[in-house]
Length: 83
Image (cartoon, rainbow, N blue to C red; front, side):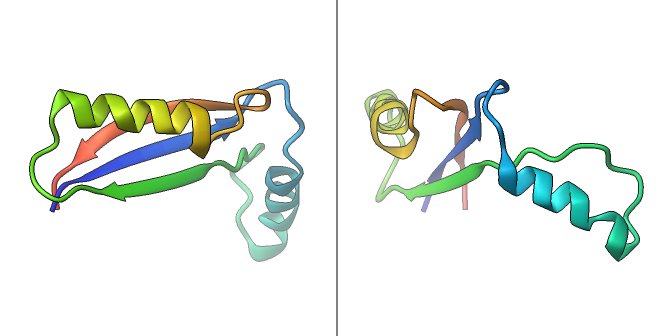
């Protein structure tokens, strides 16, 4: 079954406390190569049957209106992934 993957990230100007906490914890675990972390969200929408342009358009609309908060988040990716 094909899936539509939606990735949502906080807008660059929005404080990301979870990302800050992760970047603070990485050196304590021995990961010293990373200077910044931004944490986002990933949604996987499973589709019964073929993903048509209409279904993909519906996924984009759902991403903009339900899966993200457009005030503080950007939808950065909506793509079809075959299983």
